[in-house]
Amino acid sequence: MYRHIYLLSGVVSKVRTAVRPGYMYLLLLLLVGVVSNAQPAVRLGFKGGLNVASATFNTESFRSDYITGYHLGPVIEAMMGRGGIGLDAAILFSRKGFDSDGARVRNSYLEVPVNLKLKLGTPLINPYIAIGPYIDLRIGGEKNWELHRKTENILQQIRTQSFGAGLNFALGADLLNHLQLGLNYNLSLTDNYKTYNVDAGDIIDNYKGRNYICSLSATYFF
Image (cartoon, rainbow, N blue to C red; front, side, top):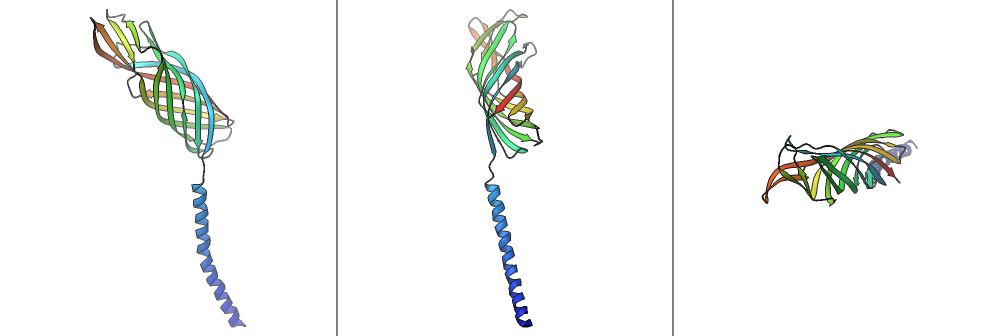
């Protein structure tokens, strides 16, 4: 009898030894399946807000003042959980420009930002930071703006460029899941304006300028 018990215990031990790796492989396959099937939480929303805009030129003799504008448009956000990393993108109608020496430069743009976003994942108020590139296309406003310099008896013309690109920096927070408040700064990496001295029909390249925008926004996610 003892011999049969010994043989049976040996068989059970071998079965356990064979089964344990099988369970490990099964668990590994389940984990791989869960990770590969993990889907980001995707939300659609609508964004709007206030722009505080101006421009900086490559000379201190050309001064520009701030103006206010606005932006609005649809937004999509994809996050890997409430806290963690994700992406957001938008298609925004945005009003930008500046004031200088009697000229009121105002242009409308179609702006497309795409940001890498990081959220802390805290309840109720969920802070985030984001950074990413943007492009903008001028879709409204005059291409050429004339101004008379106060310090020089020279007629100058500002020409608005049709395409721009830069970096977007943002921080803010989600409130109660559906509302997101944010502060954004757009750093232009391309020239948005070129000025020319117009003298006897000749056009001479003079100064170059770039938009810079600070904006406050609110996004409602459906």
